[in-house]
Length: 360
Image (cartoon, rainbow, N blue to C red; front, side, top):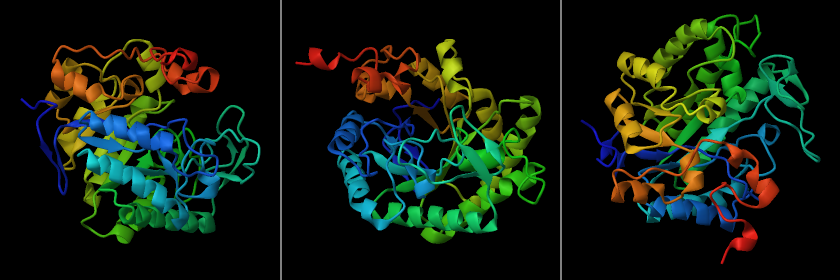
């Protein structure tokens, strides 16, 4: 049986172990979108623990697609040096480096000074406190296709081993896939084939920009908010379509990881991820509620090529080293998700971290 601390060989990449730090937004980004010393130290600590692959927090490919003031930007070449430093830190510690590229679409709660118009598949207001979203036209789509392709080229130029397209968590590409949000009746909506068309075109543009041998991953939701039973069929259609792109791997997530984690659930997307892994040739790995070595064994035994973890790395950046040293180590993370807001209120990322004034 596979073990998380065995090497993994993908199509183009070889990982020293099967543990992945899933893309995680951190609060340390600069207001201008550049990489900070705090972020470099964070990536250094995660990779120094021995993590096999580290996926960056998502970077925006377009100015209007920035999800928050803390998010790093990657929509022009001026951002390459900072991301090159991230890739270098990860490489120095032997971790495979993956840059996640994203456009937030309509899932943005605007902040002062961020007045770019929100775009998405359909007109409406997508998030509480958000602004009005305008349905994209062909000109918008062509620009966003170019922006994703350019960001992928920059990722390769910055020295990242791979790039990951964010098709999950109800950002732009995920919004197109989600029938709860995509209400278009043209060729970019109406059914699963139509809803996949624009994300598929973006993926084709990225593949064209970086060539057939540069590793490309995607991250995708396996469920949705309404009529999830019907969406399960859409999800399998999406997986079969993605299988045609020669991807390095597909990471499976979902829209409801916060309540599921708080409820104490584990491996909550594994069933659908396992079904997908059995149906396609592209390597699949799941994120969500994977905490202990036993959780990891269960995921690997269900057909996952890798295991992906996010919030436990917020709690313990050196998690990989602790798991490797003690097979029975129990990570501290309780999936409370207070890490989403704690830094802004208390200056710490996790309830188990000391308050700033308590640090020695």
